[in-house]
Length: 339
Figure (cartoon, rainbow, N blue to C red):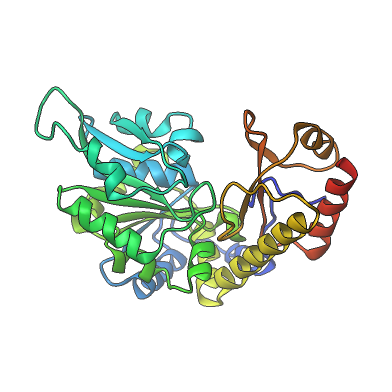
């Protein structure tokens, strides 16, 4: 049975699985010296621009840690929203691996602005305080909200004025791109993003994420940082080969469009059933909703999802590339019976 717990719960797209099987032939040189990885590097430069330097890693936390390590020294600090993935769901890994302080900032919608950041840019140059050096944002946010290109550019310009970097976690960037009708480049390089985590596991891949640096000084030591962070994959062809059809055949777009459409369908059906306490707009494939506690308990007995905030009786529902209308209807049947 499919659930709405996470888009990580979904399987692998058939074309991606076929690509893995096709790559599973003969011997190739390990650690990225293979034709698949070399071809992927060329494609990434076509998608993001010639300055893009990609480095494949195992997972999203690894991508975030490697990206942040490229940006900071141990005396620096990393600024992020209090709901950010690196603050909530990475078990302290960013602080453990970078030795930099993590500073969280409360936000109403998971999004940072120059106004929210400004009070945290004090004591610059004062050796008694950690020095802010990079801001982490995610697209989409953990609340399912989106940054417009203008909002990202405003942040990047603001941070560059302080000699700081902007790191974008793109675990769900495909969902954001189709929702905003923008290309990956228009949401990153063109907005002034300095380094990003490019995710696809949530959108049809089996495994493998990517760090992409857009500034030479951030790319300079990434191969050493990746190795030291235990993120260098020996049989890298099996990560690289998945991204080839994903990008070349438009699988990223097809999958993300479908997941977003299913989220809108599910939200509309929930609203029609009389539940209207949505706590955030559904801009991509994430729904945040408050339900009565008895309803949540009965619903969990029939289907799986995560409780986002126990105190507010708030749940999070996430649609996937393989979510169907039948899955939506099954959830609604469970919700009605739990009411």
